[in-house]
Length: 478
Image: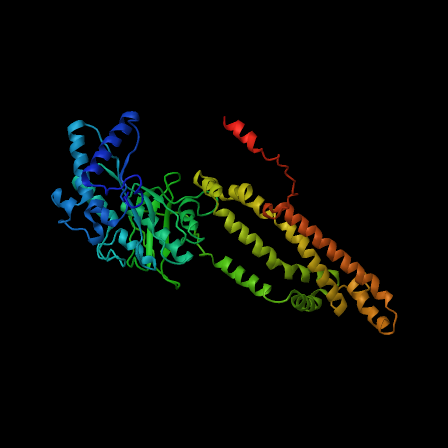
């Protein structure tokens, strides 16, 4: 941990020796308390800390000649620490650290190439690091050379660098790379720029069919002729012996690629599951926004005109017209509430303990979403009533031979009003105004009841006692 973040607790930069002392003391204490515990170390705070300590003034770079590193033979920090741990185990017969643990966050880039820094020996990271990171093979090499038998972990990682769709592809690729390179443990650390589709990357491995079907748990060698465009990851599922293959198209166009199998004899038909990349949602959002952009009365007239040719007009045609023009409002509210609810802490916790998507939707999402629908329905009822009256007034509403309708009654009363007979228009007009006002008040009342932020609390008076006199204050002091 860099001392800059905890300057009040640890003002001095951490050195090689302090890191070793803390690792030794805490590791021995944990091992004594629980011999079966799995201990991670050293959980560094950034790329330079792989090679130098905080006392090496890394803002000016990290070199073998950096002060603290030079005191320890110019050996990179992680290699020096692993050698100390190995020496301790040889002397005391106790392993202090089970996992070599690092933190890794993408520092630059804007596409799926950022995952190449995890493994590719030819790839130069496009960030300020400007080096061939090759993180996972590097970690394996450190362990094999300096402390054999140690597992590897990334207890914090995040490679999100672009839009939601690209970030989901990056995460799916990252998880496949973890399996291929033999990383033993990883913990994803959410960031504000992740986007709303990243969970789908995990579902492709943990629940790709929505009924608990998982990616295999035994890695099968799988390679791609062009990893920059298409990534391929395969594994065998021990529960039923099925082979699972994940293919990731990293480009923005459709690709065709031959899939060759060697060493296995598949039988039966293969099941294919495809991630749509949120395209269905994008299409629906575009369609609903397009409908919402038009005035409701204009849309009602258009739909009523179109449905009249199909259904012959009447109550059904008008009902369908009104339903269609108000669907976008419900969709926008329900979608917004669903997206915000699924990112809440309790939903994340339910997901972490293995709750199925249908359980999360039923127990945690549905209740939050449905509570706003009656309010919208009541508020929209007033608007729908005015639209219905307008359709009847224009002659596109309910026909007089099917049912009575106030808008049509107002239309008929126009001729009478021009002749000075105004009262036939009074009663349907008054009925429309009264019902719209009543529905609006009911909707506002429901909104205040359901939404705690809008609830009005009755003010209560507070009575204060009289102020003490000077003599009473002096007596209290004595």
